[in-house]
Length: 233
Image 1 (cartoon, rainbow, N blue to C red):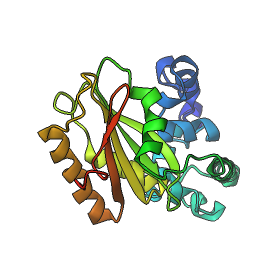
Image 2 (cartoon, rainbow, N blue to C red):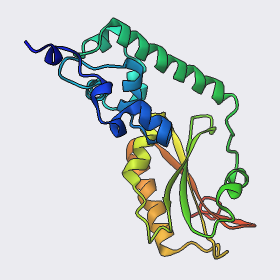
Image 3 (cartoon, rainbow, N blue to C red):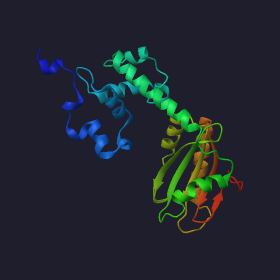
Image 4 (cartoon, rainbow, N blue to C red):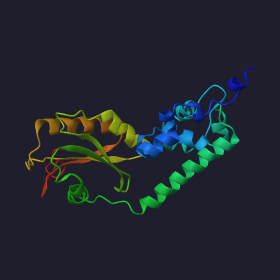
């Protein structure tokens, strides 16, 4: 048998632009997929598969959910071809560090107590922008913000807001509630028809997943409009 064929298919054999380590260095961590980040941890794949391909199988076993993967034991990870004890231990340790980091951050999370709290949090980010941006806040069961995520730029009518992506992330984070936020660069606080339709679309999707949409804020430089405060939710 050819010795090259019997050796592991490592990241070093890839084109440089496809290597996760180089991609992280050149583009930044946010440009790597979950599989690519895991591939950096395990270093090499199996005889016939790259590290990324092996890690895609690892993620698939967990339903492509990092929270679920974080619950896996070393033995469960070793059931995936290409994952031995050392690689399984590395993945378990890395995800445990991530869990502990989230626990530490929980002490610092901003608690949402009213629409004005949302305005104070988001006005510095989008209140003075010359273009429209749509964001979603993910909250835990204590109404503390887990993550702030921009979903679109350029306006609700001009840019598709992916409701499925928004709630997929909510499930990944274990969020129990969301708050929608977007800005009106014109300074007009009145919600448009598109604003109202999108709010109801999010509300309906959230109800089916038991994830509440607590509010939708329209923010300008100096003020805001709250759908919840105005009884539109």
